[in-house]
Length: 131
Ligand code: THU
Image 1 (cartoon, rainbow, N blue to C red):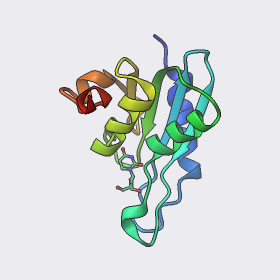
Image 2: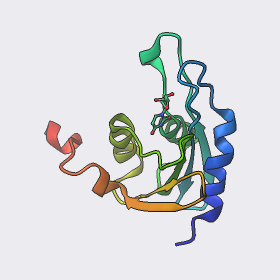
Image 3: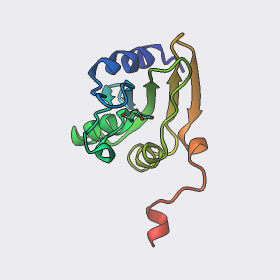
Image 4: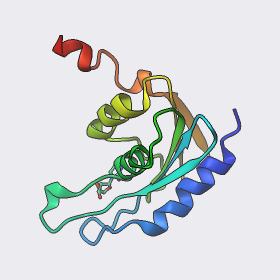
């Protein structure tokens, strides 16, 4: 699977980040099964805990637009290395996008690392555990 376009979209989405406190820009690009890309970027709040990550803005935006089937999400951060999704985002992506999506990380040198979401959040809590 070639993810160059999706990775580029995640890097570009970083420009939309609003991180006045951490100064750490993160961009995300979520790919639907039909091939559409939804961007996300982190948006911070002066009430720090209200900050929302790039992955979740992408997922919520896509779902609000009516999307329910996803193939992959690409994530680009500001550090030299890779920016893996935080625990909260892993949980939300699992529930909204499904365990089988690919998670593509991009570093500053445009190297890609690809995971299955399921491998990033094993033995997860889902709606099945509420039954
Ligand atoms: N952040 C993300 O947007 N995604 C991640 O996967 C890790 C962290 C954001 C949250 C906060 O605005 C900043 O990066 C520093 O933690």
